[in-house]
Image (cartoon, rainbow, N blue to C red; front, side, top):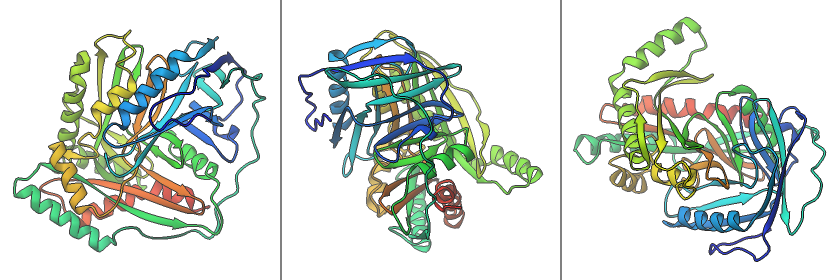
Length: 422
């Protein structure tokens, strides 16, 4: 494995080969128990295992250091790509810290990547100096369910977190800022080390419209695409404004209509869309920003959603790749607030926990600069038998602390159910 904390690379270039293969079935079922990455939605996507190269970065230059390393790695690699699709050839998976400090970020190149895009399936093998034949693709032994899982509050109790929300509302009404996103954590402990494949497979089955991901212990099923770049087309899905589902279809339709008319949620959503459009504008020649959001229905909640699209200024400029766009967008008002710098300062002062890589960019990119970066929401970090779950809510002047706590509890549900073992 190549580990390059200072952005350097080893002299030996990576040798990469991508070949088409017959459909091996569910991608997540191919994963071994350890050293894996995943990015899957509705059966398509990428999974990988092993580590051919990796870099860890931190601080304000974490994106720039990772980009520099990836550029050198990509330029030096010897690549034979028989498929030539976004996600083939040399591919890396990344997960970045929310804040400049504290928190590590990681970019990893697997030894094996299996991808599916519509009717096309491929396998990529990556190694130093030479590569072996493509592996036989077949399901691994199924993971065991976690047992004895218990949950306790993380940094703050629910009551204490409501007090933090109330303080944020006070600051907003005093004119210090317009919106801030506050997060809280929940800690789960099992009898034995958790096989990460179990929650990944449950999340993919239950939330197929989300992007189920895993990079370096951070996993989840995010409904929010920070940015996708594909052959010059740039897209971003903005989610802000949430209401919990009841399970009754007629009642949920009425709640969706209420959400679409909610001044509080529409205000929160407007801030988020504006921040994304302003961040993408310098990188695009044209943009489409819908005037009003639609309601995205997920199994546990409904969100106000807007898909922003644009055309990259120079579709052939690999230096303006997906990771550059992700850095430009992070943190959007959907996970930070408005104005951005003041919101980040308020988060640091009152949130009372280290987000780590929660709400940071997570995803993949290829050597051409194409890629997909989601926001690490509905997510958790696993460490042996312990899992730390995260949830956040957008706070504006009209926010009610009790309602925000209920919303955070609803956002814990996907990962909480996935690790419960039932």
